[in-house]
Length: 284
Image (cartoon, rainbow, N blue to C red; front, side):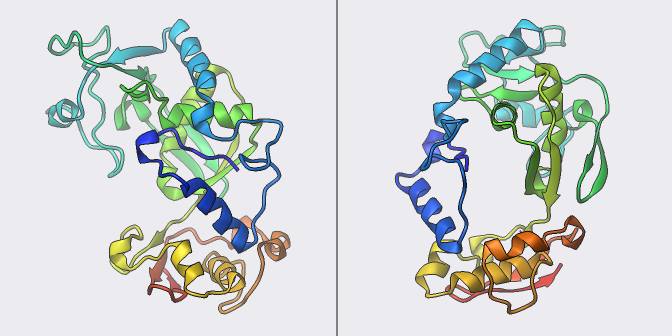
């Protein structure tokens, strides 16, 4: 159990403890984590900054980084900046690259650190979606690995932590599929072992978009406080990804022997959620 709490401005007091309690209520447990310790401690990213700085120093020494003072507005307004995927923002046009065409003098402005993306295709085999191919140089451009406030960016932090914790398989949401190409570039630049990846579909609301409070999504706290059975919640979640029958009540430990990648849906699950009631799902 790793807590990704690098963005301290968004961390709410007591939230980690509440989330760990909710997961235990569902019947999940873990061998390592911030509450139980383990050989790869600490398990909160906010306590692992020295590791990120060491990785940054290695990338700096190999000439793979540069400082960037561009604002988001400047990048978005750049006429030559095509937009990547919805959550990625515009492709960085390279204004601050030392060998680039350069922009205006921004001396004295805070600087982020960007990773120099090589002009090459990045391919990998996702365990669910199969062969994937990306062109990070033209799709996202040089990306930030340390923000202007000095905090390591997500792409760098997860690569450093997964390698340090000897993670062999990364299972996460399909919205992070395109991030994998950039992370592979960091693994290669840092000469770290690359894990296997499996990206599972997201849950969508009635409008076909990402599930949100606006679409009636409920939190696990609300479901728990509404009197739902944890076995019913686990059963519904398992049914939504092909590991249980509709209406089945079960525990996480009972699902271990049933798990097969081939059973997982490749498209999103559409959810019709009602507060304090278990939602019903239909394949999207």
